[in-house]
Amino acid sequence: MNKGYKMSKRFSIITAVFLISFLFSVSAFAMDDKEFIKLCELGTIDEVKKAIANGANINAKNGDNKTPLMSAASHNPNPEIITELIKAGADVNVKDKDGRTVLMNATWNMDPEVITELIRSGADVNAKDNNGKTVLMGAVDKVKKPNLEIIIKLIQAGADVNAKTNIGRTALMIVAFTNSNLKNSKPAIITELIKAGADVNAKDNNGDTALMGAVDKVKKPNLEIIIKLIQAGADVNAKTNIGRTALMIVAFTNSNLKNSKPAIITELIKAGADVNAKDNNGDTALMGAVDKVKKPNLEIIIKLIQAGADVNAKTNIGRTALMIVAFTNSNLKNSKPAIITELIKVGADVNAKDKDGKTALIMATWRNSNPEIITELIKVGADVNVKDKDGKTALIMATWRNLTPEIITEQLIKAGADLNAKDKDGNTALDIAKQNNNTDAIEILTKAGAK
Image 1: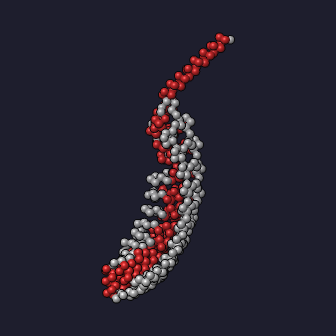
Image 2: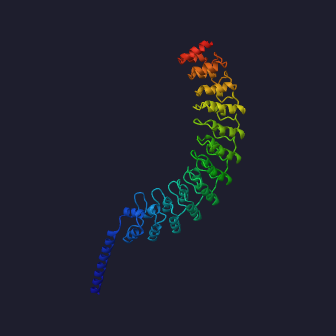
Image 3: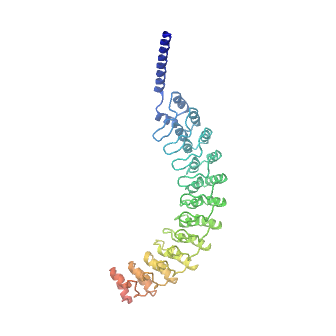
């Protein structure tokens, strides 16, 4: 009994030593975690199989928490490696440091076979990364080449087309907001998303809809996408958190797309866009269109007027479109007078006042250095002697702002400006000229009879 016990104990020790030696020899041949991850990115199927057989850590992680399976899914063109890693026990739903799953990483490679294999192996199609993005959002967000086959595959696998990112964007919004030249693929993607139940009127955290994103593309808005969204029921009068509609966004966006913008406005108006809707500041689409500092588009302005835009509508501080043109200091000497002409032609009140009692003419002398604007306003009947709430006339304002003698003499004085009008502080234009030591203005005003 004692002898048998000793033999048994000796056998156990020998077995243990053998097992330890075996495990040590296997681990000695096992590949380093980082090396294995790199191998799965660039290696062959045979190399990966050999590494697995030699004990490579199938769920190893690098500094970014990326695993061998993620590395293979995002970079390796051989789908067999994916199959081999999954077969060996790779976790298909593990996340990297950015919260991205293997399936999300696979969208970089855009291989339908890889996507299929991952879904078949239980990859969660609705998992979200740290920004709240799903794999479907990643697939539609490929600026250079979104793959329609993969998008359809994800939808068929149960991808939620109405899931939202942390900033409230859906896959449909992402397609609309992405500035892509893929004219042919984008409408097809939108069709698939809508067919799968995408909410065309969902809003992000700023209150923007997919339609607003589509019209807001400064470089290249896609008219086909805009029409497709409207046909699918996009609300053309929905408002952002600051009260802007799609029509206002087009009007306010400073774009050089002279040819596409009027066409977009036509489509929106045709679909029932309210041309007189106001944002939280009381601005309308027309006000946005005339307020473009770099390049206001006369064609858009005329189109809005023809559609019934109220030229005398006022902002919350009482400004009309005409006042905004006069107030904005633009270098577009040639276009601004033409805009004023158009506004006056359709009944803009040249002597309307804002809440500070300022007219378009007073604003022009206050903020605009363009003498053509002042000439145009006087020509269409601007009252040169009207006063603002501080008692300032256009002449007093021009002198106070040290505007050029040409503006004071050739325009305001010749138009009948009262040389001796006083503001609330009892100052005339001449008094202000003296206070500012404006010798040119002093000479001009004195010669004209100012006292």
